[in-house]
Image (tube, rainbow, N blue to C red; front, side, top):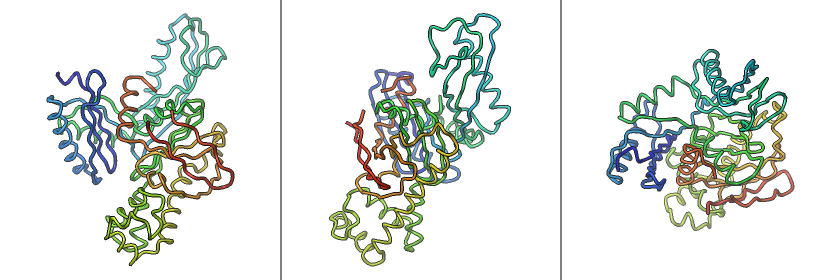
Length: 387
């Protein structure tokens, strides 16, 4: 089987590299992930990438050259643009739409030339004063048409620098996707819930993606993530970043982790000693709680005030990403000023990530149970697991 029969996907995370290969029947033939320390020149990342690619080539007995790349930059940029056209003569709708996309690209180059379009989302189209959420298939007589787009862009300079590094490492990037958008879109369809929001907590950034009636209404990132919890623990308790990271990760494993009597510390003697000698558990819990609260607050600041379309009170919020693992089994009581219908934890795995990317690439989409919201100002996080 030659390389054209395979689909290779690489997720370029700030702290982790994930790589998967699918055959022509869409069977997963290889999946590997590796932690990587982020450096300004990405040298450590590409050492890991080259190692993983070689493992994959050995596994599938084929050379890998073309890849699908997914990334989640801190400086993700979105813009809403409307294009209106009057038709003097009969034209096919698909042709009108294609011309609108060309005009859209020109507008981005003219007004936002430091950014590159990654995703174009059709919010709605208005044909002769009638609103359609998707392009109608049976519309042939058109006088006036207006397209309302949402555009997801990446910083062109940073992206070009990264793509050139892939070229130097003999890897051709066929297409680039935004990781948070692609997997949130997949989960939104999978859960079959009309109004959903996804808070994707990563290593150095957090991204909020909102869907209303299964249409993406907002996506934005802030440069704050789980590494800032680690840095807080390190600074406040005067310990190394590696010790702070180990302490933080220990809370991923059990809802009784906040107790000295917890068996989890019995399995890790140095952690138990570190906690009992140097750290107040109550103070540690407050440090983590305050930073989690800040991440959520900063991600949502002003959204429901700046746009009346964001009725979060009818929205079910899902916490995803590696940074959200702290919320998997533990109970956090947080201020909920937005008033979400429910707040839920969903563990997205490497397999689910690549499944979402593959489905997006192939233009396919594909349901956990819903959890009712408890009354009051606080929320308990409920778990949703892949079947």
